[in-house]
Image (tube, rainbow over all chains, first blue to last red; front, side, top):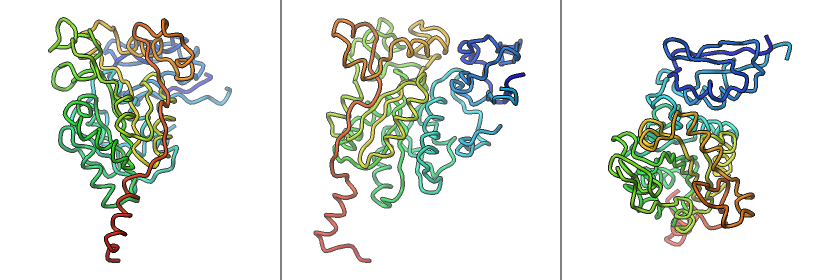
Length: 66
Length: 274
């Protein structure tokens, strides 16, 4: 795991901005319409999701290996 | 890891009530990041807002905050600044609040060059009341009160602020988050009236009415149509067509701010009782 993705579920409104801007298709909306990590290994910790989230619900930190 | 800007939010008030995908959240984060960047203290900063979607922001920010009357954020802020010129006063307003209901207060705030930082969240519509056309709804765009497209020519708030006498005028968008932080931070540095227009997406009212797609699509529209000022100035006139618009710092000037001018009046009148 190159990066660590933290999601504050209570804040997510499922707008899909993070999903659309993720360049590696790491994120997806689950059956409740909230964000989930679908493919964590592909994450490059670019931070686009965190930068664009209007609800401060997702945070990405670079992992120890990166 | 907890982000350092989280301390500027009232945690028990989050999540905020803005619609899913609303750009106001991004603009609010940009303001607190600019405050953090400039090292302004929470005890010495006042956030003043009017009425509207944008103006809800003051309720989520952990400063001394004032949620005031519709369009009247700038008069309240003027009073605060004159009562205690040491405070950093930030005004959060929307396109309707600032250019329609508070239009006069806005131009006279600019004219006086009082040391405020005004951030206008421009979502092109009256979102909270049901999507009526605002003075900043672009020509031909639809709203509930303009079902065939807006006939009224919109205000360019940046031109308006510059013409009225503001000494710092800039524009950015919710897509250009880091640029927006820089624009607001530069506004804090200016001693005088600083005006920053932050274009934000309104997917519920404006986007839906104008078939602009998802919130992400609306942000991609900003990415594709916003042109940095340096590039805009070199752009030939025939390419400034369609929906393209410039972003960046448009105007900077040196002029005496209202606090200094008022101090001089006090001096001329014989000085204040110490």
